Length: 255
Image (tube, rainbow, N blue to C red):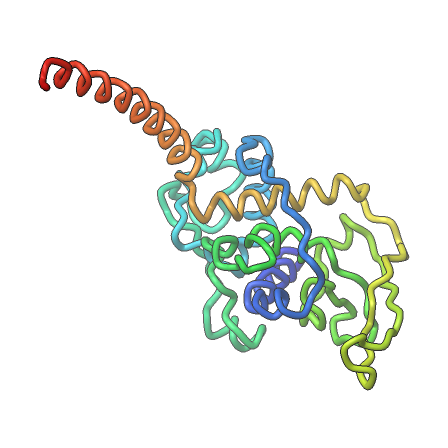
């Protein structure tokens, strides 16, 4: 049940990314160093398969690609494969789309490219996911009992509340400086109701690891491409110098 609700959380986040960009808070910056941290990617992969890969597909990603972040096939089979026994299979779930629509009102989106698809003028898709997954708070006026700062009126619960704990958000009403007839709710901060199993810093790091994996999954070859790009630019720089000197030598006796 825990996995099911968490996947619903990210599903609704994906469906509402555009709304969050327009009506929510300023997104926090995802710690980019996590994107190349192998230990963080492995931790994020573990969270992903345990909490996300139950309702959501990652149909463009194969389990054996996890070898690119330092996992062996034995580790993948033992710890990260629950829906298949073939390491070459794609990350698909057994949830029937018709059942998903009946239960959730929408088919959960594929998460392979979720981080890449949520970029906006506010920041990257990783920034959005990092902010969304860390800004839930209790709101008893909502059917689920939860709301979210990055996506106000989120129609989903906060599954990771046991990690983070429960909290409420404090708002103050102010007149809109551009329209005196309109009242705006200004966020003042969070107030802790119950503590979670993780300190806030550890929770933030766990979410950063998950987002790092989601970001990596959108383009697993990004690190290799970047490293090759550096060597290509270095080669071209050296070649330009050589070509320049050869050109000078060729034309030096020609008046």
